[in-house]
Amino acid sequence: MHRFDTFSKPLQEFQVKTKIGGYLSVTSVCMIVYLLLSEVMFFLELEQKDEMVIDLNQDTKTFKMHLDLWLPELPCAVVALNLVHVKNQDNVMHVGHTILKQRWGKDPKSREWVELGKPVRGGLHRISASSGEFNDNLMRNLGNQAVEGLQHSTRKQRCHSCYGALSDEDDCCNTCDSVKEAFRKHNWELPTDHTVEQCADEEYNQRPAWAEEGCKITSRSVARKVPAYLQIGLAHDFNKNFLHQNFVDRAQQGYISFTHTIDRLLFGSAFPGFIPVLDGMEQRHEHVPLIESWSEEKLESQSEHWQYDLHLIPTDFVTAFGQVIESHQYSATHFVKGLNVVQRHRDLPAAGIYLKYEFTAFRVRWIQSYKSYDQLKRFCTLKRDHNRIWVLYCMMSMTDSDSIPLSAIQISPDCSADWDSRTCHAQSYESSLDNALVATQIPDSIATFEIVTPEQVISPCPTF
Image 1 (cartoon, rainbow, N blue to C red):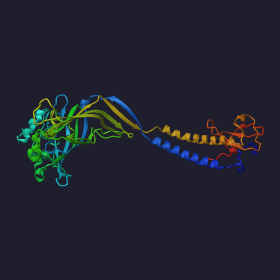
Image 2 (image 1 turned 180 degrees about the horizontal axis):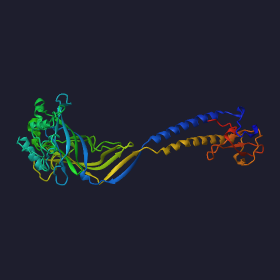
Image 3 (image 1 turned 45 degrees about the vertical axis):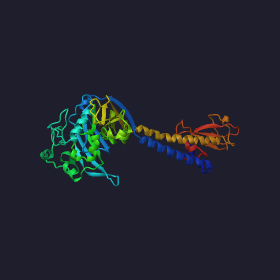
Image 4 (image 1 turned 180 degrees about the vertical axis):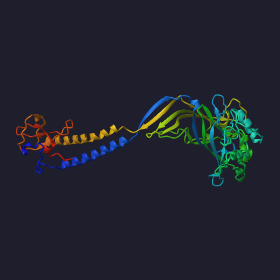
């Protein structure tokens, strides 16, 4: 039965272990571990596919807008926001909004900014459309002239908000009592963490206006997807009693600074890869170019009109788990123009900060996904890489000073295993793993190859 054993094993005495074989074993194991880890990391990386489709019926859809703005030289009592159409300057109607204005004052001793009281929640207000209208509204409000109250906002006029207490977002609550009555109908309590602008008298009585007062605006709104201006400027009907005399005097001379910092501007929700183009943008009154024919000394007697042109790209980000994040990417350019608000100019824009935004006709989809499980098949190639290193070492062993020259190797179907010579396992990575080639040195310098099974191989090559 011994003669029928085709899987004979070599004797332990014929196995030769060398130092270079040990080095090669350690090196190959390290390479296998490195390749394995790199394949695992590559498999875990997410793939991203981009798609572009036509965005139909945009005007019937809505979008979210998030703005955090810091105005260090404007009191909250005069600041207001509004949304108007680009074409005709009419108000954008039915806008859901939460606008909070936090007062900040600069301490005259420490010169540090101090938070003044609770935030004041306000609504959308009509902003002057031209420099002449701005001048008229400014002088009327500084003169404490009353403004007629409305019962409902129109395309040309705005009124004080009811903050969602009434069914129509454009219904009016012009007094503190009307706000309380609207809240009472819903069994709502007035908020304690902030106050509403109709009830701000008590807040200003407790903390009167400071000589140097700034305003931090936090705005969240939901509006229809139509091209529009987001206006930040002086309210159509601000209350002079909430202002310090220092601001009133400078405003009457024409100095109204719209120095600002955009802390955050977002149209929708943030998603991986989103670039906030305008976040951290700071613009100062000192950088505004002078009005023509004005000298440097008159810089303290002018205001300015800032305008940002934004192009919004509707974007859907689909995570690997199927969650869809609706948002907008945007690009932006801006310019500024110095204005003399004391003189009435019907053809010039009004002082303030204007963000003009428009939507592209296409929609972008970013889709994340995990790699296919076919990628796991790449792990099998690690064994083949291991065999290549093995073959390389064996060939190096065959071509040193006591080995036969490669030119003397030929393939013969007959092979004798009686010669006292060293042999080498030269497994081919292109053949089956069940077979191997054994090179045997013979006296006439002719090497023959015999196909045998791995169990029959006597080799000085390192064991992996």
